[in-house]
Length: 270
Image 1 (cartoon, one colour):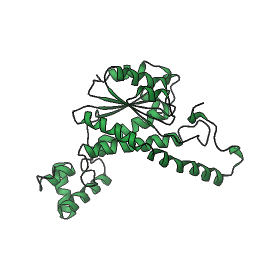
Image 2: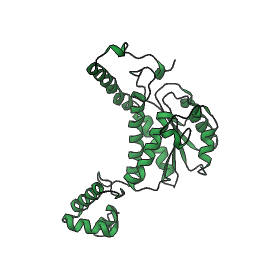
Image 3: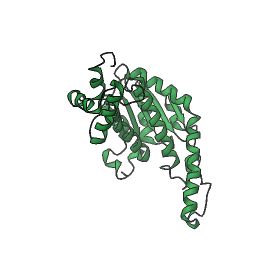
Image 4: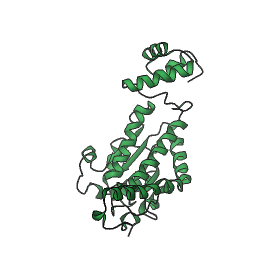
């Protein structure tokens, strides 16, 4: 039996009071960061390969099903507003399509052929990369997509919470974050999902830093889409140029983003 399907270390959950349930869930959650720390070398290898291709114009595709697929779509969808990159630079695909983001689509994850069909809709090429996300490491939608992508000369990676899964066999770089049994047996939206989210955060954040989308520690290319972000952008400009916020706001309104506003005063900034 796979680790993600093995029996919980806790039993008689229905007899625990609310405080006990919360403390025990938290006790299990503390194991996640430690598990992720052990696979940093593999994450580094994957990110290095991704950056090499993305610097040449390649795209990053995530493929997954259920919780794993939703996490991939979430990570991809947050890249354009956070880093100002095109929406087709990081793309998340989920078994069952967009409908599956809110509702389970029966048996969608069991089709070995569908992921590659979905990828071909984007005219995927050997310059692109595909990262599969599957807690079990054996999801047919993901395995089929990775296997075909690899056969087509496309760089592949995998994020799983089981060891020696099919994903490990088919991906160029496999990340196995072993978090152990879930608090509720088999509920991989819990520790496994948290581990996957941590790894995805690490991957895209590091990629975007390597691609020059961060200066110092600030999101200088973020999309200015609401008042909170306008205030953040004004503050960044003011701190960088040592000017008051009124002048910073004027620059932001003229140039539309932090990078260009600062570069108008300091051409070497960009």
